[in-house]
Length: 423
Image 1 (cartoon, rainbow, N blue to C red):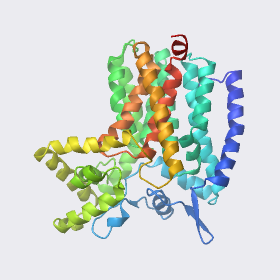
Image 2: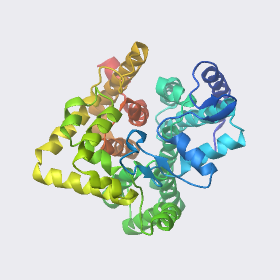
Image 3: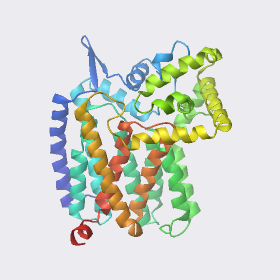
Image 4: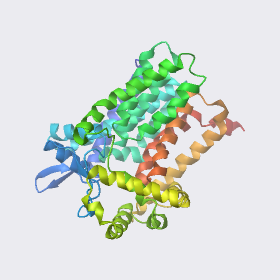
């Protein structure tokens, strides 16, 4: 990151103070990071984070990806989640002796960094101080970002490194003789991939930009090679670890069952109004009655077989894939928070903020697409990349946090305020 100007330092100092205030509010009224069994503190259960941290304590790295079916399927995975956020949780939990105050403070720092990096992107783009200040205030107060400070979730940390990737990539575009920038942009994206595999979609969509964009003045092949090298350099330890575990190269194991389930009539008929866990457990228990051989399969064989059956179903009934995608797209026009939790306040806050962000994004896109600079194009690329997994798997309301933050930054860059005010 560039050396901070005097104004930026003042903004950063003020952000530090407000982060302490935010952590205090979250600690007092919204704490979902630590629970207590009698007097013993542990990571709050949900999405397997508590299982991973506890297994790491015993020298393992595994979780049960669907506990409601563990009696008939081998749903223990040793590579379902990439390692950086579990390591962060492990270190922060045991280094603080399970202190929820200190863990909330760490989470609060991360969510504030998201706001500050959004501010820096606006400042780098010559978007003006007022737009940059609007961006940092909106991101800081944005309910989903604010409340992530008190929730176990890897997405804020993912956002920090995605935004660092974007900032470093933009620095490379402005000074292409300094190839350390393209190297470190690959490093930051590689770290992002080790937080959530969604970043792999970003890599796929950024490569055409590197190879074809007019922004790249020369030596496209060399720059692309450096970028790919630094990206995969980060993945090598994880792939090597998985090779030792499985005796073959594996990035992740356990997600192919979702591809299979989302092609079922149960999913197409019931999603998103019914919980994905309920759909999965009901459907796979019925499926197992005529496919009991699954009980004899190990972790990788189970994952491979679900993928084989999913591909066979698509080949035999291509229309089922379209129906599945249409069912998944229902959450893009929500009437409530999914999965439903019978919480009217939560439903209203999510729906209102989502449609507000979407409206400003659409206006900014339509009024400015002929004049988009590199930072806007790259933001769109990352936004699109975050939606790609939703077509393969699914998205719920909590998954919209990532694209919504990116859409806010995009809108702060491109919203045509003067044009709308003066016609």
